[in-house]
Image (cartoon, rainbow, N blue to C red; front, top):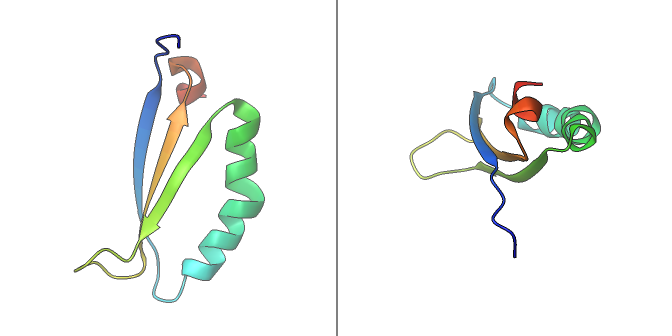
Length: 71
């Protein structure tokens, strides 16, 4: 297995109350396909942490190199 360098981005988003469904629909239709076309990959989307509101969302994305991350 080759030693591949990559950039991992953690992005936290605070949504309006009740906005999670609309955010997910937009991400699946627009954001994630755009990231995939650029060569990036969303690894996970997390929410519902103990003590956090359900509208706090964390996304972890892998970018293969600095140029794509700066995109």
